[in-house]
Image (tube, rainbow, N blue to C red):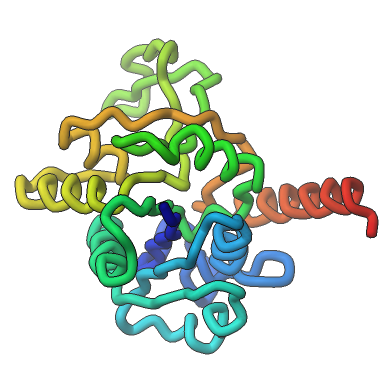
Amino acid sequence: MRFWAVIPAAGVGRRMGGGDRPKQYRQLLDRPVIGWALERLLGHPRVAGAVVALAADDPYWEALGLDRRAAKPVYRVDGGAERHDSVRAALAYLAGLADGDDRVLVHDAVRPCLSAAELDRLIAEGGEAADGALLATPVRDTLKRADEAGCIAETVPREGLWQAQTPQLFPLRRLTDALDAALAAGVGVTDEAQAVEWHGGWPRLVTGEPSNLKITHQADLELAAAVLEAQRAATQREDPA
């Protein structure tokens, strides 16, 4: 069984605002955000390569040369208007490289702080799961539902609630079938686990870390930089050579 990384990165990040490029290409310390995400995935010994789904008119990827500098194969495909379109395009490409029982790790291009320990845990606990698995964290804060006036309509019990992260890990054929069925039925899915759920599956929750943050706003870049610096310092303490 091989593992393949899939990174949907065709979005333009309108919510972030500012800057001259999509958030996956914003500079974060010494490389673009997507460079961190790609490095974290390809650095795992069981990951064979990656497929990155980009906008057809993406003007940034080629100039960065991230695929040429990577130690493992990185393939580019044209993504689509929605996340599921990009993921599906990457899966179609993988169908020519991988076996249907190979695993795919779908990871947000704007989650640069994935730790090696998290990825190890996801592969160890979810790699054999027929319906896949995903990193997630238990909801810790009290949740409020707002009304149309912006006031509290109700307090939502947080027991049993988890906040989904990525990577999300699935057998290639299982995820392909689930996405195809959901899209054919006109079901909108916001992540891959939802497609598998709708298709009758029970993806496994694997505990992630709060530091595996998703960059959505400008302040998230500063927080991600602090996390990455802390991770670098910890690695240097463990391996001073």
